[in-house]
Image (cartoon, rainbow, N blue to C red; front, side):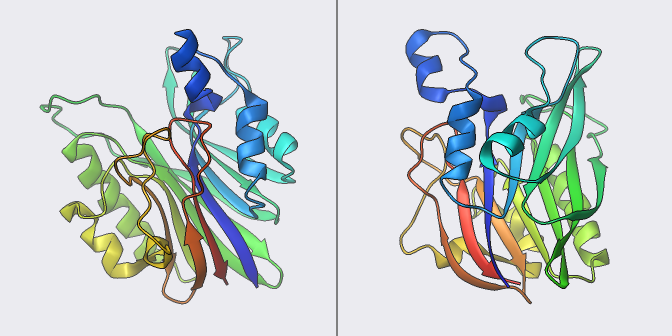
Length: 245
């Protein structure tokens, strides 16, 4: 069955251009929802998503975007609570039923000795029913420090090696494709960027200079087409891929 995937760091629904122009944070659910909707995706992994918390800015963004963009199913995967009770993490939107869902924490480095911003991260793992088939969807957002990235890759690899279903891995990895730490993932999976018609970059969205956002698929999934659409909404452009599962 042919489906469309997107991976999109939404920066908690921040309008990237207006926020820069006005010098303040502008949250625009409609802008982000329309960007997602424009790709007619069946499954979307979103990064930098807020959950419902005590502060009025912390709404159930997964639910809001699912409803606005036309997805029947959604899940929020918490990675960290900012302050006491402000959940932050990733989200999965799906037009197909989500049969199972859990969140695996990426271990924090024992020693934080790099000049980098550290933040606890996680990996969403979802079992999605696509017709008569089941596909495992992994969604994640890697850290900035080398030690965080090593822990993230090791955690991902352990999950991939346990997975006996067709699977996809999507997210913002904060690493360029030539990063040595990504080699174990490239060994196991296909980067859908191999199917771009031309070289495409994802960050920053208004003038991208690097590719740090990915859709990987297991070898038993056929890639039909992939692209980074020229859509500017968040600070990242999204990655899209049409695949046959």
